[in-house]
Amino acid sequence: MTCHDVQTNLSLYLYGELDFAREEELEQHLNECAFCQSALAREKGWHTALNSERRDVPLDLLAGCRQSLRAAIAAEAGERKRTSHFTFSWPKFAFVTPNRWSAQVALGSFLVFIGFGCARLIDRHDLTLGPRSGGTISMGVLNPSTAHIRDVEQSGPGKVRIVIDQIDEQQFEGPLDDEKIRRLLLAAARDSLDPGIRVDSVDLLKDQSGSDIRDALLYSVQHDPNAGVRLKALEGLRRFAADTPTRSALKVVLMHDQSPEVRSQAIDILVPAHHQKLELSPDLIDLLRGVVRSERQSDDYAQARALELLREINASVDEY
Amino acid sequence: MAVQGATQRVDENALIRAAQRGEPEAFEQLVRTYDQNVLRMAYNLLRSQEDARDVYQEVFLRVYRNLPKFRFDCSFSTWLYRIVANLCLDQIRKRKVRKEEGQSVDTASGEVDRFQFLMEQRADVDPQRQLLSVEVNQRIQAVLEQLTPRERVVFEMRHFQGMRLRAIGESLGVTEEAAKNCLFRATQKMRAALGDFL
Ligand SMILES: [Zn+2]
Image (tube, rainbow over all chains, first blue to last red; front, side):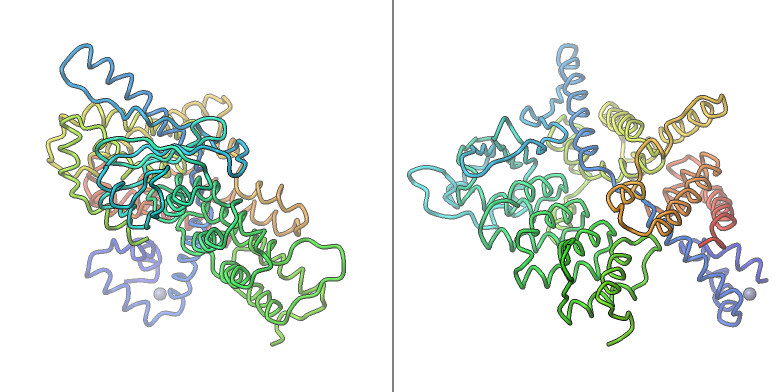
């Protein structure tokens, strides 16, 4: 294999799409040729650059698409019903509007509708709201093998509806700050398979009080796979920015989160814009140095900001 | 999340059969298994929310209409991506035609992209850095647009969706070898445009 052969096949090699013999040959050549090794590094470089340019689908686009599909299918199903025996109707309770949480949600007094089925679960976990309440919903109620939260949506001014997938349907009503409703939302924020539901649940919870809320936000910001959900959790964490556990989590996020926007938010919460003389703790200074030294895209806001802050306090980048 | 894996391991064939019998929950679950990937692919290929929405709708309506005829001759995902790939190809071709006719097209710039978003949000950051990132972004966009529609779709499916060439070939109705050649040409163009720049 010549250098030219190797270099034109580097991408196929990185994709693992060369046949066995060619891959062997190519690796052998790479072992011995520094020129092709640097070509491989360049090839990996542009592969990575492409990934960082990739766009996330806006969450309301996904919600909007699902909504229009439901409507279109409901229309077709109605048509079929009239013309044949074949019925295929979309669940009737599933209506979502994009930007459904954009309306302000105040605390406490709102009603929450929970549409769900499976009376067994309700009995077992004492989910009824009213005189016989007193038990709590364990996270186990959302065990995805038996139930999964299909949707969290605003069902009217100040009202929330949580739809759980089950065979029959039942509806419950209760205030948003009810302990059980809250636990259900906490579980949805963490366990729902749908990032749209997780972001909505986090959004709804983020202004409520209580250390369990903070813990849920901390969990989401560190473990949720979707950057939109992590950003939403960060919004909620702003008011806990002075707490030690929050600061520790924010530091981890700033250093390791994959999303530049999430890192940007994290640094702005850790070191808010200020007008007086800036004072930073030694461990924060170390962290900022770490951020500056980390390998990022040239446009990385968090990195630029970290450098700016270090300059402001006249701290060098490399000092330990 | 561990729970995610657990539920998604539901037997897909059973789900498809249930959907074929007309169970709406089964159909919805089937949609939800794939729709985020489908939308991500359409959105990134077409760079327009509106076009991505149209493709999404058309894909799953066709799935809905044709599912009763699905005979398990191939995997469901191959069958689904055949629809996705063809619709995206059509859209890209249409767009190319429109462009050649000199009409305005809502390309990537139609959606305010991440970098512009950053620029607006972060007016206080070094403008030099931002210009550089915008330039990289534009360079990537330009080379993606230089690919033929089929190269673009193959590249998307391999690089971003992580599909194997064999599956890509099946989706496009071509041999694995033809898909490989297509990917090869795409990567040559990408390397020429980006290899030394980054
Ligand atoms: Zn060589």
